[in-house]
Length: 312
Ligand code: CP
Image (cartoon, rainbow, N blue to C red):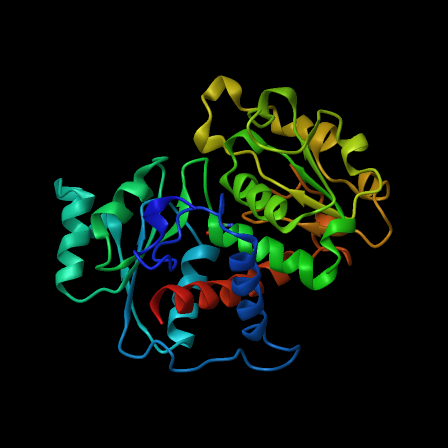
């Protein structure tokens, strides 16, 4: 764990990355999140654990799932929520992000949920906040999306608890995907059996990320238990790097024919937003093996567990 994630007692104070988080801490978070998963047909659990606390969402990049689920998570724990509209905030007049945080601290914010394009920014913000408030990384450049990694691990574990027996294939634009990075960190720490990273050669992960590399998706999905598809992160590529999306499904998308190579009970995941007909066929995204809507629901539960651990 990086020093800036802990307070002096060793307690998790900020959530910046899953890399280096101890396995028992991941298990604690996932077990707590389980308690916030609503049984089918029932209303989502809620309590007043964080009554009187204030959570601020600061999203410098677009988001649907992460932002909405952090807001619902905070409200379901009884906290107040501030959604700062960055385009209408004083950052548009040149105010630094540290001055923005300092201003909101003066109003009594207890936790900042931040998404930003800059890798490394979140650690700097956490150092600035110190013990005064919690910093939760809601997406950082290409490197970290820790609550996504947790919700992916929770979704896999709920379907297939024996992680050490699983073959998990993560496929798509791995190089530019913070989702892939955080999923790899979580699944490695939790001891998944085999991790496969599959991408066109130009989009494979850097060497420091663990996992067996594949450039042929047919090979990568063969006998897999879990297939996680990723979208092409056009916003993080130079124009000449963006692959031809008209050919992508045929070469590197999850079609019904490719899915048939995996184990018959394999689950199909996607963090969203999906580009249907590019990295995943409609019939697969909406098919019986897809757990994509469960991932979304589990995202609220995981974020409740994280807010509770950091603020309670
Ligand atoms: N998976 C994910 O981060 O989705 P959003 O960009 O909609 O938050």
